[in-house]
Length: 192
Ligand code: AMP
Image (tube, rainbow, N blue to C red; front, side, top):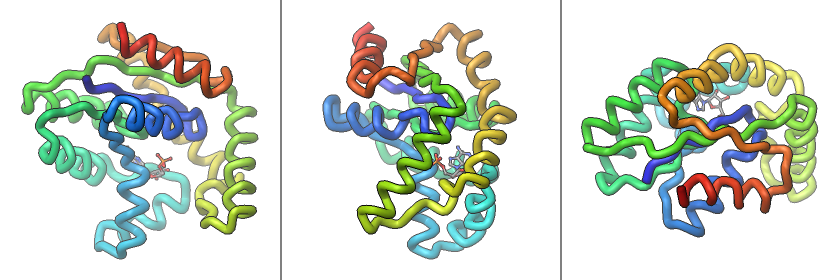
């Protein structure tokens, strides 16, 4: 089974993806995590995308499609949770082609819907908790950069809701619910 978790930054995609990895042995493919790893390890690509990420903008489709293609190739058995990918219509089209080339399909697209104000509060909390724990604070969780990330989301990623609705794959879940309730709603979609 292959699924996409859609939703604004801070909607809870990563939290739900980790629960699915632990509970069902699925493979989380987070392009944000892959890009951060590329930056930390100092690859050429990591250096190229650093400024774009710090500005809260999207890196090029070509780069993230390349990252996802490598992972799809590496796991022919599938079982993917796409987290933070696709973020543009071009990425969504590319994903369909990549999966089809491996005889795979998308089984569900789940959108976690959360109010903007709650998103901002969650990000402020996430940054404060990381700081208190002595962990690195994501530079793009800075409130000004976060506002830019939200704008990018509404401009470039929100149209994917219509795209997947038209394909009859979309389920919207209220991401304002407590985590356990969101997890139960996600499980209900996956269990059909
Ligand atoms: P995330 O951790 O998913 O919020 O991603 C952090 C940052 O990585 C984003 O703000 C973008 O700069 C970049 N990024 C992650 N995934 C994508 C994607 N699918 N397309 C373009 N940029 C991405």
